[in-house]
Length: 448
Image (cartoon, rainbow, N blue to C red; front, side, top):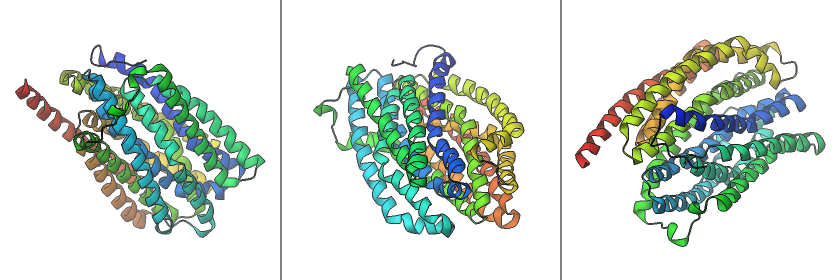
């Protein structure tokens, strides 16, 4: 099931890798989308608004675990590409220990800051109780989320994108079933949706762990593989921390955007929440191609095949150009049809808010697609500061646009914040990639 990406045509290697990854990412989105649909249709618009108003906090915890696990496992992929099996196992051991400490830290911080954060997010008083319950249940179950993201990240870094998909499909189905049971049968409301989510994630993590133990003896860890000396820790932290900062910065930007949106009332929150979920589904091919780019680049960087990295970046950039145009056209013409899946008889205000957001963001999908390619290529080459700095660029531009433009243009200003941040970030990562790949090529020639 493992795949060496240092030989063969890049796209022929990456497309079969991306397809199961794409399906898996769609199912991972269904975790939260299923919650939104079930809550919106079975409880009502107010419950949907409560989940939507606090969803950036949920997304922040999720992307932190994804950022850390993806950053840590870049080292795993580089060592696999270099044929260093002992180093690969040490990397997995180090990733595991660092992930445990990271989850404990995130949970402690969230418990300390949750109340003032909810106040700063301008969440309406009538939504506050459900919003807090939803996000804190997910925070308390963070070990399950990190477990799946780390174990699936390890398998993907070694070229296996199919197995995590299978387990994610199972857990997604479990999530939907449990959410319906907890809400409709037990009457647990919004908290029931969060409990179902945590249980489903725990199942996916356990399945990944059991599969690795049975099928991959080369990944079995021994005591010597958990060697916590500073060089080993730093090799992973220098990749994981910038990725975590990048994702946390992006999450903070989304929280600010949501906070501005929360000032416009429950119906606008519901429309904005629904539009974001529709967009997240449409963007999964870009996200999947970005993850594949990071894996491909990490392995070829380990093998010092810069020519292959350049070829893959160029071809994937063109591929996502075509996809971004197709996604923009489909959402522009059929976005309202998809929006109505989430709510039973949505009001004109909800539909107008959702449609307005989609109308203005689809125009910048091309720039967003390039961000995923160039940022993940930098990550795979070990230039961890670029993803972090690109996140800061997005944070500054998104926050400034949302706060400033919303005062002048109202809800339209919220909708324009995303395209502005994507264009700024795309320019930054494009320039950064070309600078660093030339620098690394020169250094490699000097070593040889």
